[in-house]
Image (cartoon, rainbow, N blue to C red):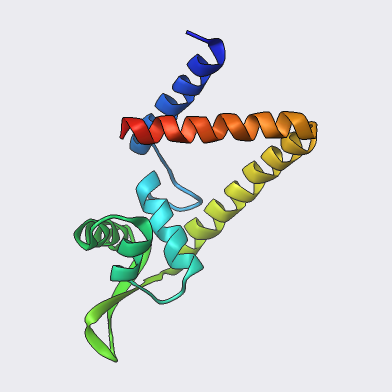
Amino acid sequence: MNPIVEKYMMLVEKISNTTKTYKSFGTDVNIYRSEIHIIQLIGDRRGVYISEISRLVGVTKGTVSQIVRRLENKGLVEKRTDESNNTRQIATLTEKGMTAYQAHVEYHQHKHKEMENFLASLSAENKTILEGFLDKAYDMIEDHL
């Protein structure tokens, strides 16, 4: 196998295996990858509806409700009924949830800065090659889903 393709496949495996890992993000609870990304959405869109989270993430409302319930049990999220529409549930972050949200934002800012610095060091030709590779890699992942 081509060493670049092999490294790419190892990266895909590493990413897919991270779904079982967790971090505390400055809190006293374990927060899984799927949970921190729901926290990120709630933090980015204050007063977001459960149904909107479902639509944005691309999973069922039931799945989002289960994750939000776990986050409620961990003291990270509060859920309440929308006063103007009894059928809608609004999710908001607690103080502990805001701590996790901020830690996650800072983590990504740091990691994105590292990647930006790396990309800035590349020539225009190498950036084009890299972008082409990522397009092919994306198509390969799509074919395997």
